[in-house]
Image (cartoon, rainbow, N blue to C red):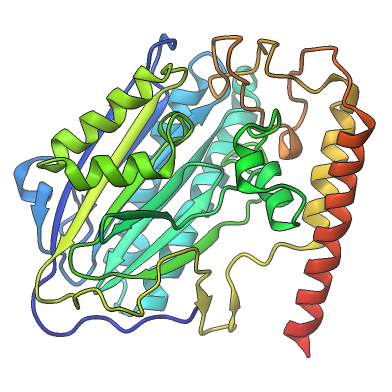
Length: 392
């Protein structure tokens, strides 16, 4: 999707609140979040930001979910929020241009900078090897919302009382869904649903998924770590956001529900509601969903996944020894992105992370092996066709 127009008449008013919770089984909270007015670079949840009118440089909302064991996850997520703000201050706030494409590319570049910084830090501190973080970064400029995604933290947009996921998990099961090998319902209970394909830090390079959504008056953005989204269904988010009297109580209710459902991981949520005459009211033909952003500079999606990514992921899975991939019944030893209870599967960053720790002895069935490799074939073919059409 190309850059939407920016609203030119009337004010846009942002109401925002965020909250994080350690959950019921973790000893430390390795999530981190930030809310900022990018015009003033005021990053706080004090009243002047909890309700504000975005200036010429827009507003920022970001969730980071650290991983890596010991304190590495906390370091990675904290670095992520600090570096994004620092980079946007230099790259965007002081830039001459204020157009939408410059903003979207600045968001993406700031996330890429985070990856470089964390990767370098891990090399310089071998005790933190494998550290990283997922992130969802959202920026509003005019009447458009831009999101940068790495990993499986999520963004939802609630419009007319209905929540819709507007990010796409960078996970193995999502690839299988895209290939038609799994349904979303099957993916929710899959033993492999916690295998993510990317994180910030473990590798020198990262592909940032950039998407865009046209905002309407009354829209509500929900950003969260998987400690929240993994413990509830999308209709739960719709109900709580729509029925809560204010954003503070909505954040509390979402976290409370995640804890009631086990609270196996840290839980973080940001909720931002958009009002004002600068936004058009919802229309009958408006649609909400996952919309890749196409930069006018190259007229291509900002995250063209290619066949090499799939081969790399599968090579990493081979390295993990398919016969020893963790199952829901086995408690793994990898860092804070897993679950502490044997009742929940731990999240592994195996496919793109060097030398992950794996436990368990149960073999994959022949059907499961065929499913994985069959899906890769479909995905490779689809992306090769996509590239062919793109170049035609």
